[in-house]
Length: 340
Ligand code: FUB
Image (cartoon, rainbow, N blue to C red; front, side, top):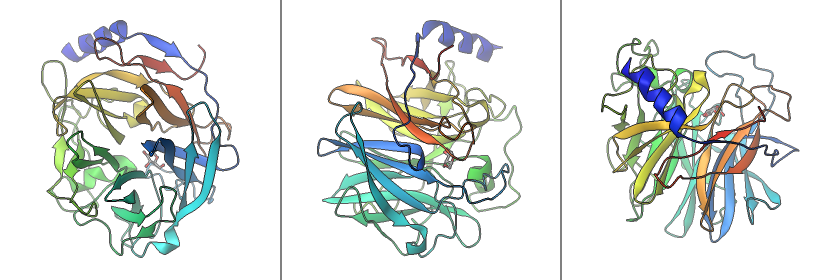
């Protein structure tokens, strides 16, 4: 009952904007864009969608990607350059299938590409590959990050120089199979009235190649401080974690999966807890919704995807970009991706 009231208040309080953006890349399918500014240039690390003929299922088997391309832009309104294959699954010793949403970071004069893939036992792990260039080619480590699991790594550099990885995803992302701390292929989600499964966060080691600590839960709470429940499908975490900092606040954003929103919650520490605030992006064409948020020359942008180019085929997506607005009160304006 209080959840209902909470949602309504947010929807009324937050202005919305309609934005018709164009696919940034037209000759290959791209998704899950993680954007960063390195040395004054925008680099985008997306998934590279392909048609491999695997039928659609709830595990996401049809997302059967085999390599990554890196893209760059001088400005969000400018041209985009495809730098070609930056990492191929055949060059990742431990990875067998499904290169899902990646992210990248720069530290120690090197670029780090973080990526999820299924290992030989069909368990999602998170790997890392390094390069002296933001566009690769990247050389993969022989083994995944120790203690890593699930999908969708997003690496955030705090203003004190520490790096944190946020990760996880339910259903095909397998988070429900790790509830005991060990992999259990029969693991299920909590019941609707139990607290929802959470994303995970771990500080990265100095060398950027391992976790510096055991992953912790990224708690999302409602305005009364109660953890969101597993049955709160409009607001609970599903996948696609991202973290940005604005005016000293930490903004944790994510996809609600089966309700298709990009939602956000704010907090005072990179570990949370984060209080649910509202919707950043309304549902796009296609099942998945996955984004990143980046500041370019003092302006903020949302990179995201939909399936415009493939006419709605959920596993053949295209990346897009649109301005993002933080309101004076710290809330984010909700974006409608299409004309109403
Ligand atoms: O691209 C494959 C998966 O689809 C990603 O890892 C999820 O976030 C969803 O976008």
